[in-house]
Amino acid sequence: MQDGSESEQIGFTLQRLDLSSDLTASRRESIDNALRHFRRTVLDQNLLALRILVEAAQQEVQALSPGLSNEQIEEALEYHFECEYQITYSTAKSLLEGSADDMIAVFCLEGVDHDPVDLSARDHWWASLWNVMKSSQQHIEPFPTGLPQDMKYLTTLVSGITGGGLPYWREMQHPDFFKKVDVRLLESPVDHRKRICIPSLGNWQDVAAFQSKDVLDPNNAVGYTWAIEDWDISVASNMSSWPEKFSDGTFVLYCCRQQETEDSHLVKTWDWRYGFQRGIFSSELFESVEEYLAWYAHWDEQTEGNTESVLFSLW
Image (cartoon, rainbow, N blue to C red; front, side, top):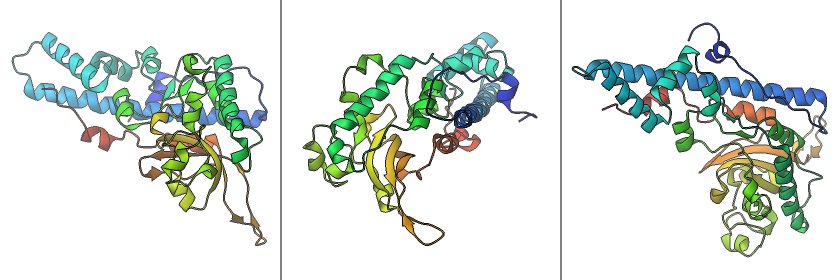
């Protein structure tokens, strides 16, 4: 790559909103910076992937296109990119030339949804999640004093975080962090009931126990790795838009793990933490959204190697 990241050459902006929060100004700034870094990192990854795809297609055309007119070649490239990579060839070239900044938002190339944040809908979404948790408060010990403030603040900065990779890569590989609020679901607790796991209501592997509880979805068995690592979890919620497959996605977990202090005392600190599951894989648990974003930017990222490994032939 040339001096300076490609994202810096194209230009980068972070949406800012005026809002009230229990977080300090310095903590809000820390989250702003973490989101800015995440977006820049993902954009750089995506521009590199686009360059690889464009150059590979151009090389294939040169080798296999004797007798084709320039118009036929362009049509083939456009069709190929739109079908296989969910972005047109001309758009990909324009992005690499720095002449299609508006397409960054259209294709979520910074890993975020650029639609305006509906603060009222998001507040309603959080309130609904909290109400579902409170409806089973007697089963949650200890019960959190509130929902994670850093996560709530993050959801006021962008309407959704889609994750790394070009559109086709995200669709195949990447559960999102959180999605734009679907206002059609705001009046129903069902969406949140699918998200929430309360370990005390049943053994991790006892599906029958989960099925007998009104608030839970029978597939909400989460945290095998975290349980093995001695994390105590009182409640967890899947933040991603894949709650129908509950074990996949980003989780906020009210949890603790026994730790030894410098003076050899054993203490447990209950707090909200962040983790990711996909199939049998579980990440470590992170103490803040800043730490989680730094990790999530590189989860199954679209590197030069794996982009080249799944190139689709033009012919």
